[in-house]
Every structure is written in structure tokens, then in C-alpha cells.
Length: 392
Image (tube, rainbow, N blue to C red; front, side):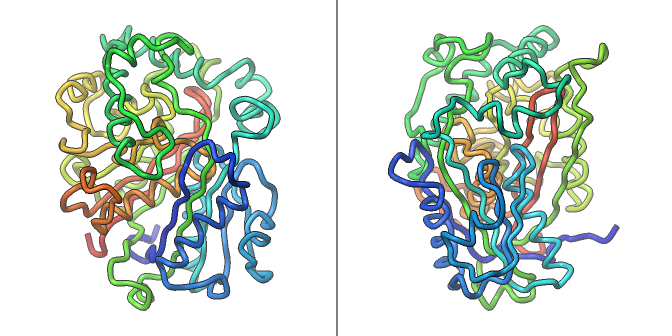
């Protein structure tokens, strides 16, 4: 299989403010994010030759064609659970490598707040994973099962999950586009109202509106648009059968889909020691236990040993590897289709040295991972990408 490393560049990105955007429609959010990307790349709608729209809530290419006036170009609507945003970038990358187009647009977005139902709604794809395997499943309930099993196997406690949430809020409080821009304490997180034990209110990401956009081209064309572009190093996807809860040997704490997607991108990018080679990880922390599991599934610490790195601050802004420097899904927010592109936006800005708040700007960032997983423990898919400076 031929490597895709450094063949495609990201030359412009944009991100709306995330939150309870009662002031904006889904189309408004798309315009807000995309026009920031247009300005960043120095291009306009008429320069775009094809686009990928990532959303659970809108059908068809009209979701971009109408608000952006894209003049009858090819537009594909992508949906792959919580990996939707990263899947827009994956599709666009391969189209550029095939030389079908020269300049393309990816937009992930979701309007989840003011639509009359709680959560993601039972009528959407997230509620219809499988008629048997997914029955009576709720995201907090399934992740709570993973947390209790992890506690029993490895001796972690609620305080360790609380420390992850405190870190996420610390980072998000310094991010002007984040939804929940306030710091919390370990005591607040431990004693918060329970959603599904042991997961409390501060262990769970909220329901958020938002959009993020990226403009891509082949790397040889990137200097026409900017000097500080980043390149795609690797892209991976792993879909499991979704029958974990039906299997007597399923242990709830080994997430094969994220592990397999990780191995795909490490092989493509030539990563041997992620803890030494990766500078930033934007991972899918829909619940605090999910970030803990990512530390282990992605090879940043041994299985069962995450609590020691949490206590040591290994994954804080000033630690060895910054996890969720932007605030993560927990603090920045999780409009499903937008999250993957938003994670890449954070990596892009950190590499350029343009994190909006100096107190959260990392030093010497060259390589970052964006990661999403969709579904619940036992019914997962995972999408992942590595992005960085050219030649790294």
C-alpha cells in the first residue's frame, strides 16, 4: 500500500464559536467557520472545486451549496457517527491524491441544541447502530460500564476521572471559542450530580452547536497559498462488528477499534514511540473515562497504568504530551459532525504558533493526532489522523 504521507496539505482552516448558539442557524455556523477558512487560505467560494459536508443532521450537498453559494460543484455529505468530521478530511485527501481536484473544502457542523429533543435523538443514526446490539443503550450508561470495569480491574478511582475533567476545563477556559469556558476543581467534579455512576455531570461532554472547516490541496501547490501550511501524515479508520455486549469475553476496557486505527496511522506515519514523537493529541473525550482509555489504547502508557500519568500531569499543557489542549469535547463541546475537523483546527493553530490565548500555546509543536470514536464501548468505530509540519 502506497503511503499518503506529506502528499496533501491543509492551507486554511476556520472554526465557529461552539456553544448554545441560539443566535445562529446551522447554515450561519457553516458560513462562520468556512469564511474564516477562506480568509486564512486567501481564497473564495469560486476557487473551490469540490466539497465534503460532515453532519448527522442534514441530508445531501445542499447543506453547503446553499449557504456558501458553491455554484453547482460536486458536494458529498459524509456521516460516520462521531468520526464524521475526520471522514470528510479522509475523503478529500484521497480525491486530491487521485488528482481529481486541485483545491477542496471540508466542513463539519451540527446544530444540536434548539431542535426539540434531548441528546442526539433516537431517530438519528446514533440511535440506530443495530436493532439488537444497540438496544436500550445510552452513551453515559455504556461508558459507565467501561469505567466500573476499569476501576475493578486496575484500581483507578473517581478522582482520576475528575482530574482529567479538571485538565480539560483548565484548557478550555483559555480558549475563546470553547463552549464551557470555566475552570472546575477535583472536589466539584467528584461531588457533581451523577449521570450514570461513576460518571458525574463533569465527566460528560455537553450538547453543543458548532462548525469547523478546512481547505486542502496537494502539497506541491501549498506554497501558493501560505508558508506555514501543515500536511497530512496518515489517516486511519477501524469499524468493529458492534456486538461487544453480547460476547462473554468482552472486557469493556480494551477498545480494539481505537487500537487498530492507531496502528494504521502509526505505520503510515512511521511513528515508533508516540510518547516521544507526538506533541499534541486531540482525542475523543466524550466522557472522562474515554480519554483515560485513549492514553492506553493509543500507546501513551501501559494498560492499567493511566492513573499514574494522570497524577503526574503527563498529559497536561506543560506535561510530556498535551492531550486536548483545546479543551476537548468536554469543555470545547461536541457538535458531532464538527468535532473531528475542530480537533485538526487545534493542531493546525498550535503548529503555527497561533493558539488564540498565549497561556495555552505549546512550544515546538510539529506532530499531532486527531482522534474520534463513534458509538459506545462494544459498538465502536474509530477515525484517526496524524498531521504535522512538512517532512516531519
